[in-house]
Length: 87
Image (cartoon, rainbow, N blue to C red):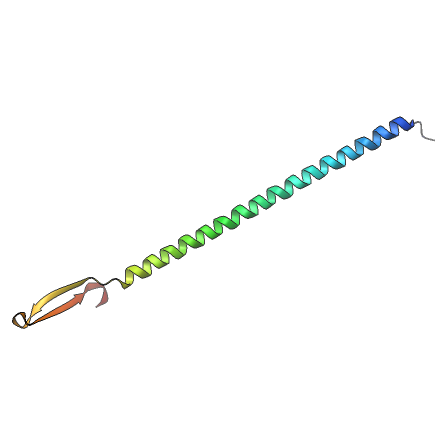
């Protein structure tokens, strides 16, 4: 037989409910931390992709630029145009 009184049983049940609630709060906090970590990693990944695309675009734009220099030929009748990067 149990020597617990009804009051002690109620207090024990309330304590168990309190601990379950505390465990739930800790679990929810863990889920929130995991979600924030996931969001941070995802946004960093997107920022890195945007930087990479910008660098590639800049490099492609630089390769397509033409820097012409002219040399007079045929006694001034014609110009010989040259681009050192696109020989």
